[in-house]
Length: 423
Image 1 (tube, rainbow, N blue to C red):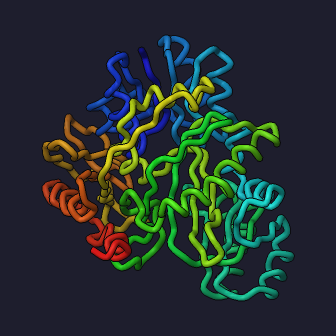
Image 2: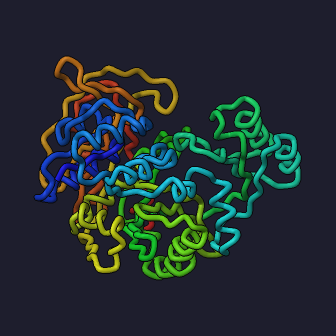
């Protein structure tokens, strides 16, 4: 089989390495891929948002199956365009991808179908939003309605900070048109859990839960990032909570989307907060999370391509999805200065990986035959082990063997999870 994977980050590298385990896979093309992905797939310089270019390449190359991984091409209708020329895909249609493409849509969906989430209001008028803020107490959450590279959510510690965020989004267009509409919602407290799920529009099969670490520095200090590391499974996510989530969130969401004429197939990501009043949805994503994918897929025992095809074909209920016992830890190695200003072009030397280890490349390219940094988050260094402490220790040991002069990482990935487990 010839497989096409749209995207070029660490998530895509993890997906590609897992797809390679299927013996029927002959060639994997990554559009655009990156310098590290080039070791596992044929990279083609076509951007993830170039829908016409992607479709043209897929047709001319005789692609048998496509995986559309990032949010932008999904929201732009990449799956629809590929389906229109007869190429089956993993991923939701444009109509279904709106669950991430518009936060206002997703909040309204939850309100309509009684899916637990934070109290909120939506605004297209800046003065109305500013006036509303005078009626609520801090902290408060301000969200740009559209996609904003994972940075369109501001947790404001004061009403003044919230008003500043509203002005930046709506008046200064910090996130372009994504901030023309904003959602203001109550601040929830409790442990956060990420749960990715496979779904074919009827059946939903949750993957192993995970815990992300968003802040740039140790002790959850510094600015929010795209994610500085993950562990799986998340110790706060018990069997009892999982059962509640299936009954009150997962299945109701899938049924709600179908009722709205927006049947969702692919990977639906549930960002959850385990509050004192039960689990609530913080956000939906219409695709695999990053860096959650880098700890979830290494724990998948079943064949990924088979499961993906089952979501496409509507046969998920008849497809075994088996998970390995054990734990995984991913440490993100980023360029110094990320998520603000940073320099690129620094040489990277990757160590050999042993069984249970993987290095997923996100922001890097090949220059004169050498791997060099080319982004903020550069590497996802992952290890699996029988215990969480073992996975963390192995991931950091592997990280310390990476040679990357301009790299930095948090040194406390997984510590909160260890405390929760009492280890």
